[in-house]
Amino acid sequence: LKAAFHQPFASYREVAKTSALGASPSAAPRAAMAQGEDPHAAPRDAEPEMQEGDVLACAFGSWYETFRRLTFKSDVIALPEDFVKFLSADGIRALGRGRGGGPDAASSSCSWHSGASDSASDAGSSGGAADEEEEEEGGFPELEARIKASIERLGGEVLPKLNWSAPKDAQWLHGSLKCTSVDEVITMLKASDFVAHDLCHSFEHCATDRTRPDHFTLVLRRWHDVYESSEFRCFVSDSVLFAVSQRHTSSLFEHLGRQDETAPIKCEIAAFFDENIRMAFPLRRYAFDVCVGAAPQRRVRLVDFSPWGPTTDPCLFDWPELAELARESEDAAVEFRVVREESDRRGQGGGYF
Figure (cartoon, rainbow, N blue to C red):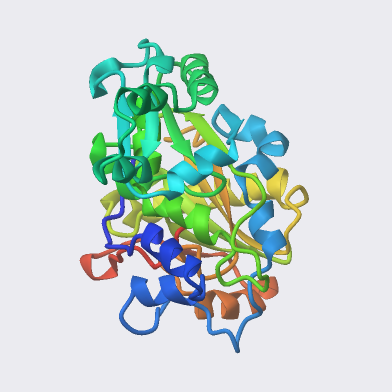
């Protein structure tokens, strides 16, 4: 999916280093991300803290099998812990072939190493040729082979993400999130602070001492060209769909300002929720994303689930407002918002999901 957000974010790799020295793993990134208080974050005294179980329920691997007929074809690949540590480390180095290797190049010929290995070499390691030979034998050949096979199985073009986040802040590397080779997938993941947030602070704002799950997965989704104007974020509380927002809030799409366009979109999303999600997703409160096809069919496809709370972008709402709307949701119509004029535009609301 092609949207990008270009708001600056602090590097979570730097935050991870600070945490290793004893600093709070949750306070540090919040201080680094913004000067002052995030206006979109729900006040802790107004709303309960997020729960670890809610975040885990929104991980792609937790819901994909249940809803696979409603969403884009995808592969879920378990990541070895060594590769997780590699993604969390600073720097990247590819050996064995250049960036132009393409999807048909032999993945096993490319070894990936963290910046720590480069630093050791730069510091004057005396191993010489023996060290170079050991380095060449490194990398993740089994994982690379699985990624390559998955790309081929999904049609040669994929969108990569981890348990929750796609590397949408790193799509400047290739011009979009579309990847056609192992190199592109790994480089995109390595360059993304959204991915780094998954790795280092999965449970930020949660009432838990844990900062990450026991295991991570790489998700490769078959690439589809989707119009940004067709994507919407939906908010649910107590099995009631009460709010829907245009997903890409920095853009104005003139056709979404017409009632004859938005009314059927709203109806299709509500019907899709009632028929497919209301009784099937286990959480009491959550957000989910959909894309709605063109008229007359207006086919609705599920894109993702996100936990209720400040790590999720509230789009054209803010979290205190959503909490208030949720309390009134039983007797109210669905609040449907789109950017209708230039003054309605918003940048990223501070969430990573």
